[in-house]
Length: 165
Image 1 (cartoon, rainbow, N blue to C red):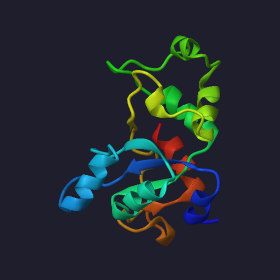
Image 2 (tube, rainbow, N blue to C red):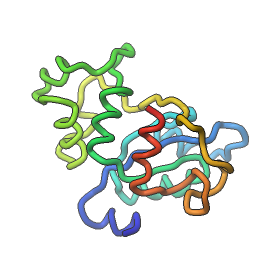
Image 3 (cartoon, rainbow, N blue to C red):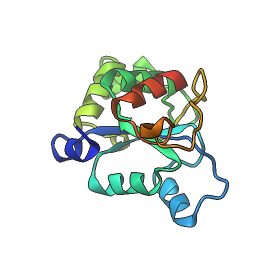
Image 4 (cartoon, rainbow, N blue to C red):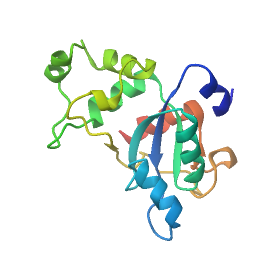
């Protein structure tokens, strides 16, 4: 099932990771990356799979990689790389104040669309990640379907995120 089919049914939660840097980026692509809040390499954001966002992903496909994030990976991403204003990590006390038991319950609510990142107070929308352990495949500049790292990768985005946390 491709990206277009996924977006027609239940709205998927997509993880988007910027892979390439800022040198020689066309102006329209730079603007698109800024709208996605992907200002630096190894930064990740979560977005809904709406037609508007899918168009933005296609515009910037030579600099980013994206796919459907699983609930388990989303919970780990929030726990290990999620930050509140002031650079403080997300704690169990913060989650309890919002009425959640643990990171997995927040991830399930985000994944199902019942909750948005904007509705979580003081949460930064960008996740700063490490470069992937083991490095990127060579060459980075090719599409994922052609053996590279860029573009749509579906469920395989979870493996990349695991390596970058």
